[in-house]
Amino acid sequence: MSAPEAVHADNADTDDIADRWDPVRDLPPSAKLVAKVLDYNDTLTQSQLAEETLLPPRTVRYALSRLEEEDVVDSRFSFADARKRLYSLSL
Image 1 (cartoon, rainbow, N blue to C red):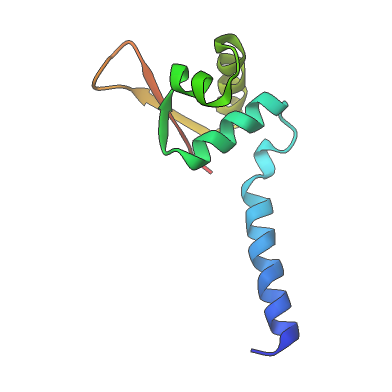
Image 2 (cartoon, rainbow, N blue to C red; image 1 turned 60 degrees about the vertical axis):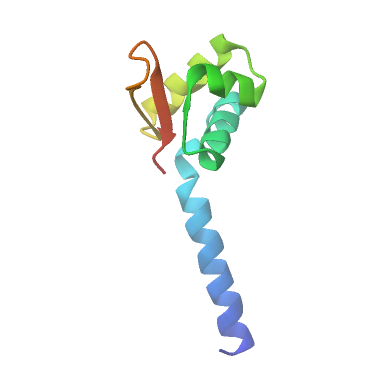
């Protein structure tokens, strides 16, 4: 692969990453942080997200609702504790 082709391939990878995060770009910083934490951790509960992000639970709830509005987060009931929901990133 020649140097120009290698640069083009790197730019294509960067564009794919940028496109992946496009739905999150205009969201509040708290939603971006929650999305990034979910990107690093497969599935977390709301309380685990609050613990990982150091955000108040209310802020995490707001961030999750904004992410759900953009169809960026999937949620499902926990089999271990049906009172809790598990969240994962769907980008």
